[in-house]
Image (cartoon, rainbow, N blue to C red; front, top):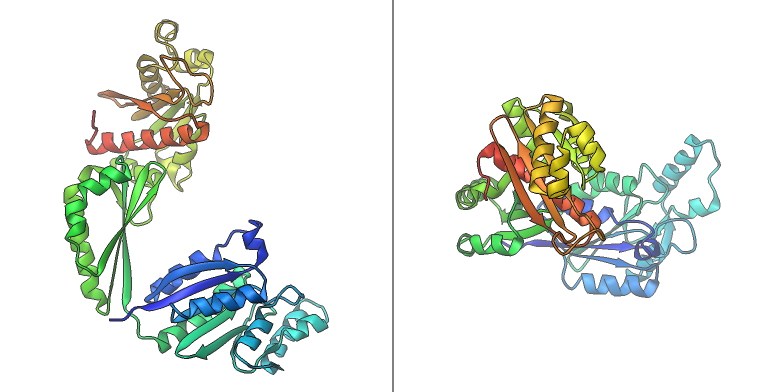
Length: 419
């Protein structure tokens, strides 16, 4: 089974300057994978004839499909169409249906078509035009030496409509592609290196057509298992069998399957158990509350928060005992324990969680350096506390702490807390 390989080329100095973010390539990669085409490379280049030609020459040595976006506007810096005409040894000719589309767009806007926009309807004779119903720049489809070249505007909504209406269906007709299926397993609580050690035997025994990727992110690792086959149903079963094995190997660290974030998984657990939660935050300054309430429907389980940044607020709003603060300090197991227990009582919830620490980059001491964080979980029967040690980056410490609390809630609700 020969894979069908695609390469994406984005053209535009604005991408290289960082003035816009290339979201087109990610979207196209997803869509191409969906029809069984594997994207092997994405290249961003400047609005330069030399760079465009070089990129095309290189791409066709390794890809069956070359998809380009950008450089099709009406101004002088938009070179793509002219470069393609030269590259395929052809000339530009007025394409009447494209001119009609452009004229109609201007008519609907209550404006007369300009000469510059009229020139956009001139296309290389060797191409098959790709209609753009949302903009003034048609796309172009070329074929040479068994390769397909497609050029489209860089405007996202125009490109997406052209891909959906024309390019993807035509590629499916032209290429016999295998099914490519991804299975995503979300894990939390194990660093990538340790996770890889635990999965080594399982990973080594995977069939050759199944590939595992480790995708680390803040506080967790996404495991992506990818397979390709001409038999989609059989492939689906194979992937599920491997996922079942994975569940037996690291059951305590898997929190979801698919594109699910940890706070969403926590919300599902709370809803399933008909439980409510409240937060008491010091070093995270409301970030934990933000994570929990970023999920639609969180009002069903989330009651409220106290951001007790100052010790006086800890005493007044959370009834942390002054003697606790005096003896142990704000960043201590005793203080965070009282914060979690008392915020639960204050809001009348099933669960209370709390954070207190030194986020940095200053404020640390030899006994409690920057990155020293205490977190706590409290319910009606128990209180669990944990001491964390992070780094000197303030924002990362805040984010890591919030993720650690969410994981502590998950572990507590699934009885997998590790001391």
